[in-house]
Image 1: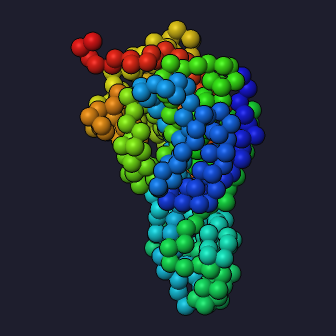
Image 2 (image 1 turned 90 degrees about the horizontal axis):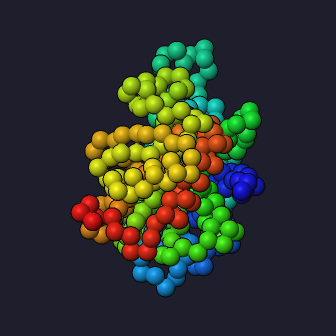
Image 3 (image 1 turned 120 degrees about the vertical axis):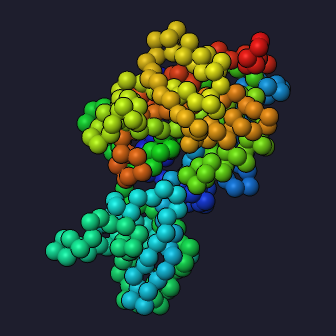
Length: 356
């Protein structure tokens, strides 16, 4: 089944900064799409959205999950000349900011801006950009001008970069971490619906908020749903590109499949089911290991409600937390296939206890 690239492009080009996932449109767009395939669509108080499908009478609940939010900035200070200083909203990288175009989501509507930076002739004085040196210029001459534009302390700022295809094999753009995950779980739901697959349990397709500041959306929604099983998808570093050391970061190569992690939070029996599914269906995959935590929503689901069997399937991503995050088309397709086929192998009341 062909990937819905029209929705992929529109979703990747939307805006969903942490804390504003629905308000600025990204989560709303995702909900409109998932409503085509789910029996019910819900949203919680902080904006985590989910579609519910499958056996609606079952008490056994399986989650497939990604996170909706993207890294961004907050206006922190406006000087007398109208220049704007910012702080991070999530893991934003100040070194990539200079010369980037941005949108400031002001009270009167969006405002165009740019991250200014001293010219090369003088910026040898600093080795690289940081929060102290970057600033935003909105074409104002005074603090009063900025105020009239509706820009205040606390206004959220996002980069403008858009989706594109890179060569014949890659998708690139901003916030593939982790809107590409939200796209993949929505594609799983679409395929279940269009292929007429009736799951024996209740499936929750969850697009969580506020992952970038500490898994907050997942921590909230897992308490509401109280799932029995959770399959999480996120991104991991693609380590064949320059400046990575595979012996330290692990060997994860674009085009060779999704990455199945082993970690304390990852349930061994569920992980084995995923790997067995991949082998049976001849779906390529790679392996990774994490020590104390995965750093993803997997941890939030696993350590909730007395323990929820959870697994992490990641997508190798080049250039994480930049505006040109890049993934291989084949990996996207193979992660979708792996989640889809794993769901077909989970039974209602599936017992994942180690002594069973």
